[in-house]
Length: 435
Image 1 (tube, rainbow, N blue to C red):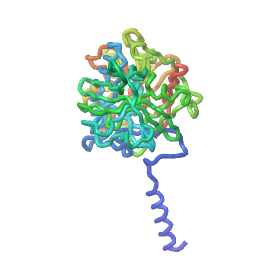
Image 2: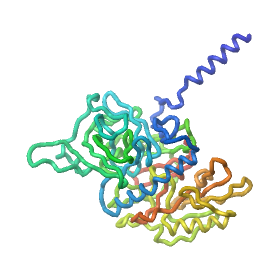
Image 3: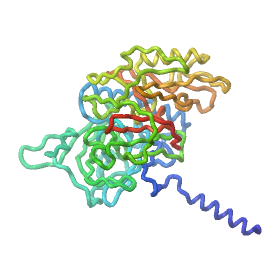
Image 4: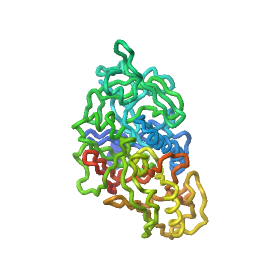
């Protein structure tokens, strides 16, 4: 091959590489991409340039509001729906999925939330919403839902007038600082190649505060208005996801819907259910080990109580795993026996130490009924951008949380396949490279 031909070959090779869109869809794959909220493939950008560790710390600083909100819903025995946050910048809601709503489909990047029963999007003309909104007038399949329909009761819609029919309007508050009003509507929802007709969702017309998702939220809970319930036999109440690391700028994880393509040999633990908060995915956490030591834990820190909402949940919208104070202190006290101090606090993490390459750090293992989840080092520790210090990446539950609830959060779930088999009340966990 002469010099000119060689140059031409490499020019074509480089141009073909550049033509590949790392964020593009893969039509042959039915899985939905799960994108870190501040990744390069997401339309949302962090409030300022920062290291990924600082981004995690800033996102995790919003965890207490989410935990307080979830636990207060349990204590109040209400079916009001928690939502992931964000207006111009998301503060709660760390992964988005790209869907199409309407006919023809309008692209929306919706927050993935396993603790939510309902979907909603900002609609055109919305007061206080972000620039990207859904246009009902541009969809031939859009329709409003009447206040007399049972779906209106599910979202606690405002009462119908004494005579005649009216659209279903409802209001909702979030995290104590945000509110929205919406009307209940239906339209076609497209997830890769699957189309769910007459999918009911909230069409938001006004918001206040900074905790409403900028392009909507997709509720993956167990309630009658969730995606699982509305898709009926299509997905048979089965889904799984693999969440990529927040460091994976150009990579995405996957959301698998339905039993097809799910891992066959995966260990599972029973899914538990609280009648007062039926959308939450409770599991039976039986213990925690630091290294080879099973941490002594008071039984009441682990016990599931459907009447109070106490217990342990798996949640996609909380960043850092939170344990009730006695459980967290027991874990921390065992951990500091294995690592040389002094210890300091960085952000919400109070167990930060000098990170030395030659020092072997103890592993953290979560024991559930019928399975154990040994966390890899990257799911257990956060290293500062300079690399000189590392922090144990768990935290205590905030003091203002009413129910004794432990939350297994997305930082600890990253690079694992989490299988929700709601039909058989099982949750599976297996290591997988999500990137």
